[in-house]
Amino acid sequence: MTDFMPESAWAEPAANPAADFWESSRPAPIQEHRASRPSVRAQRRPAAAIGADVHELLESMARKRVPRLDAVRQRLQQSRSSLDLSGMEPALQALQAATTALDFMASRGDDQVPTFVQQGEAIAAAVGALAQAVVPLLERHASGGAISRLMWIDLVIESGSLHKRVRQGAHWLAEMDQDLVARRKQSNTPVTTRAIDALARRAHAMHERLQVVHRLCRQARRVHALSEQLAAGQSALCTILHGRVQPACGLLQEALEPLLLAAVNRVLVPTELIAAIDARHELQVALTQAAAQIERLREHDRELGTQLAAMEEKTRPPGLAG
Image 1 (cartoon, helix red, strand yellow):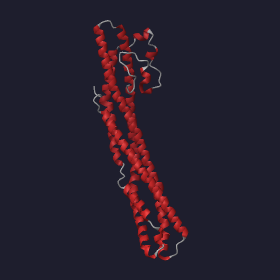
Image 2: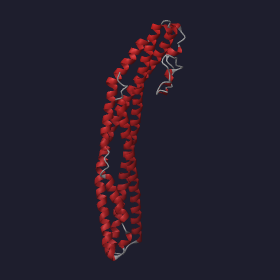
Image 3: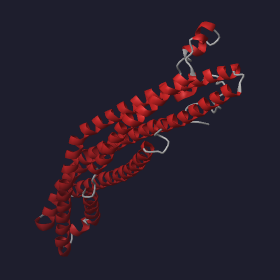
Image 4: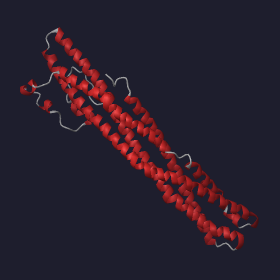
């Protein structure tokens, strides 16, 4: 079974070859509807002329359209380098470790007060380091979003242009198939039969080349979908960092201030301790969400890299050139 047309020996009639191509819901070509009319049959183009048109179409795609689509792929490949989380992940891990090490009971023992103070200072330092790592990520996301969308538009346009030409080529090959079937029925000499067989072999070879371009178009659609998923994942990470982690950092620091003050020179108010415990829990939940989102981003990025590599292979297959 081929990618876009039913399995067929090119000399046999197809029930409805155009309907299977790209799983189209469009009505069959007019030529098929009127195949029984002598006037239309007389206007049928010869297979040799159709084959020349398909050949030229394939050559044009190989020379122009496929290289343009590959140029978009290269730009998408280069844009993957903007997903740099090397500074973000260690900062999140350091803050998670600092909040986990925070011992609220140490604030009540005179001999452990210095330890509690050091723990508070460690959290403040980790919060500052995370803030420095978050700002570049938010800036890259804000500036790179528009550029990414432009590349996706180019990908859709170029793959759509190829898609349109593949559909045209498949339609012509279906016409060529019909003409060969009609001529084979009328053939009565070995020379004519050999000529028809040669045209059928040529049609089959062009069909194989058309399949190669068809698979490239499908691969481009996969890359486009993964690129959008990756961008949505980056937006989700920025939302978590800006909307949950950073506010939770501020709440915990505010909640720790009265505890640090009480540890040195006043009585602890129980509600202040409860507020600090709740603030730490809120921050740890946000940090866990951010870490999970980073892991999902890495998975999407790895899959996108795999699909981009597969797309590169499909732009340079041996069967694409004539």
